[in-house]
Amino acid sequence: MDKRITFGILTVSDSCSNGTSQDLSGPGLCQEVEQCFINSKILFQDVIPDDQKQIEETLLSWSLKGCNVVLTTGGTGCSPRDVTPEATRAVIDKELPGMSQVMMNKSYSVTEMAMLSRAVCGIKMKTLIINLPGSSKGSKECFQFVLNAIPHAVALINDDIESVVTTHRYITAGDVGGFGEPSKVKVGRAACRDRESPYVMKKVVEALEIIFHECGRTTDSEVIRIENSLNRVLAEDVHAKDPVPPFRASMKDGYAVRAKAGSGPRKVRACIVAGDKPENKSLNYDEAIRVSTGAPLPDGTDAVVQVEDTQIIEVTADGNEEAKINILVTPSVGQDIREVGSDIAANSKVLNKMDVISAGHIGVLATVGHSKVKVFRRSSIGVLSTGNELISHKDTVAPGQIRDSNKLAIINLLQQHSYEAFDCGIARDDPNSVKAALYKAFSRNDILITTGGVSMGEFDLIKKVLVADFSALIHFGRVDMKPGKPTTFATLHFRGQRKIVFGLPGNPVSACVTTLLFVIPCLKYMERRENYMFPVVHSSVVPLVTNNDERPSYLRAQVRFSDGAFTATTTGNQVSSRINSLVNANALVVIPGNYKNYTPLETFHTILIGDLAN
Ligand code: AMP
Ligand code: MG
Image (tube, rainbow, N blue to C red; front, side, top):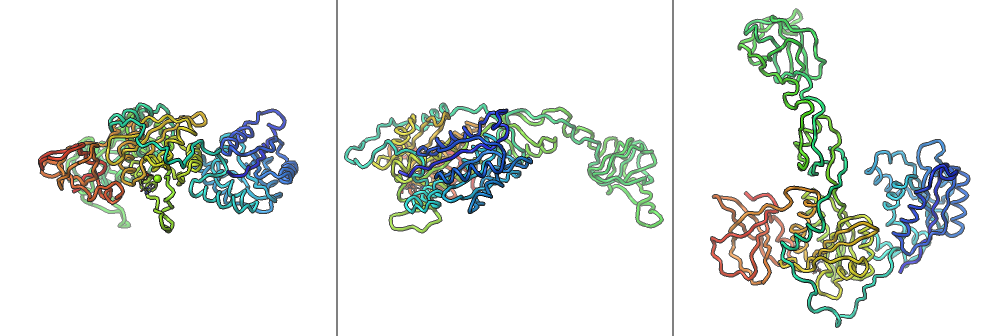
């Protein structure tokens, strides 16, 4: 267990201090500290006015009294009375600009106004001082952004070698950190472990039904910038405010004319190009106006004649401009003119609720002047690896170690399907480590994907920790499929919010196949996509394969469509540890259990997970 971290929470606000407004940020931070650092102690909490001297005195006094961390909230902005950064800077011995920068960067992705923050972080004697914004939401958010580094910073400041090691491992590997009581799960009694899984085996379709039922479809929406809206689901119909085009525009580089005057000579009165203001002097029958594509047409114009259908007759005295041209082809009324609203009529519906936003949709939104759009909300997703043997893919392996491939493979698999997921580190096969990593993951994410630790070994702890420490409900813990048998699905409540856990097997192929079969359809279903399942075709398989297992087998394969039929070629050895079988696989071919004697003409249920091969 880690040592206690002591906190002081200081609200700096004139109005809270004189009682004209209520301090929500200070109590909010106390709650955050208690939840994120179960083993912490809040030594001091106070509310003081925006007075530099008073702030300095309080920081100094709390530091002298042995506070490990002081969180200030308020007074970091640009108002004349905002002086918390000045007071902090006057007190600290060393500044920690990285911490303020992280807060700034992350807050900027929430609101552009973050750039106006002047928060300072630094060290006074043995105390870490962190300026947080004044708003209750902002202060909590910023605290979350830096919280992982706090135990390690405190250990370093106090020169506590033992804690320096464990807290650093925690940051990089999701190991037990400064928060969390020990897990209730006890290990090390191999003789007492289950020899048969207590979980009922579910068919894949049953498992999916449970997932859809438990996760449901969101009704929450949010308004986002159209720049970030690709692949999101529209939560409302979109109407055009203005017509497109908003003025009568030329479709060609040529001449605006009156059609009734037919072919023949015209005086070139002026030139109008795209971007010019429309001319309000009406066009005469014997006149033409040289126009470019997209130029606004003058009144009286009812046809545009493309330059290719004209000849020059006369030039101006300086020889530079056209004075007279000849129209070679008789123009017809409306020729090469885009009338007002001919592409999009004013107030017409241009996009439908439930559409998945494509590049075309974004083009339309931009055209009709919607810079923001209402879409269904997505849940935040975390991915956690488990296993003593795992190290980061960036590190050199020692004997007995392997690189964590699941986390990156899954994060990128989700990204291929437009979902962003966060790296929640690696937990060791130790109940405290698993608990701490889950705790941390749940504090930021609504959906957690774990890999490893769901099989029958005594160190397969995911289900046990979920149940014992988080009171999770395991909806299923075994699925009738190969690979992927130990796939686990659970729900729980954490700080009053519902969390969803996919406990996927550790073998790299199993982890990816189950992400494809369960997680991706679930994410699409939750955000209300109409097509949430991968398309299915029927294909013959080469080379001929048999399935001696009772479970249906999901073979990785490359599928082609030729001569009116789909043919799947399996991608080599299909053992579940061999991640190479996923390289260039665009399909999962389902071979039923105990399937031996089939003919080359037989076709199989084939789930298309990528583009068809040529
Ligand atoms: P487990 O499901 O924890 O029993 O792990 C099954 C197999 O998958 C073991 O050989 C693990 O070493 C391997 N494995 C588990 N997690 C990962 C991972 N994140 N990356 C690569 N291999 C893994
Ligand atoms: Mg393991």
